[in-house]
Picture 1 (cartoon, rainbow, N blue to C red):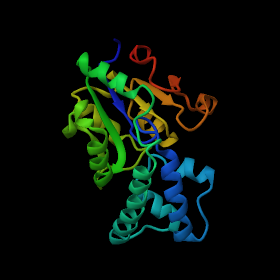
Picture 2: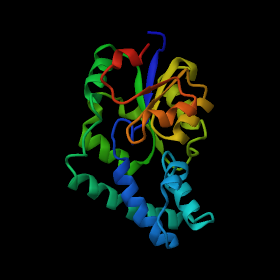
Picture 3: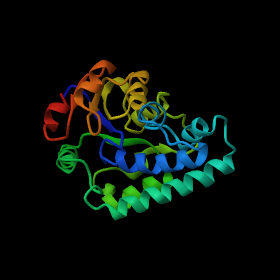
Length: 222
């Protein structure tokens, strides 16, 4: 294969939970500012961002650390409960397990780079048994030190965790901010997965490939 490793975003990519996050953030944004986020605001200011970024946008100023922790904890508890109550949605993306099995069997370096925070990452690791496919120590998540996407940092760090240069990696993303983060990091191949938006939505974003699921995973690696 041309590329040496692959980095997955998680939410909306390996786990199609965008609808659940939308529901949770609509409710919280209504509480924070009186009106829920619009669809456009969701796309531009929520997906791929840290909770701190989202809360700052919602209230129109930089929140205190304590406020971020309080509101983020409340929102993520609502979100995790939604996941548990929606078993039809609480599963990995179509053909994702087949793809991950293939990567493992062929010793292809891989990791996850997500702006989810530790409580959610631990939740995903346990519920989806991610240790079956990933070295947990190489998963990169929002730990309070990494700027939110579209800053390139998270993908640069993920490539380093794999021992690779960004240009030798593939990134699979679903969010505008995440796609821009991968491009800003100099990732060699940026793939958009149309998990919530139509494939046409991504045509204007300058990605290298657009997929709708992980069925043709050998093509993804070319």
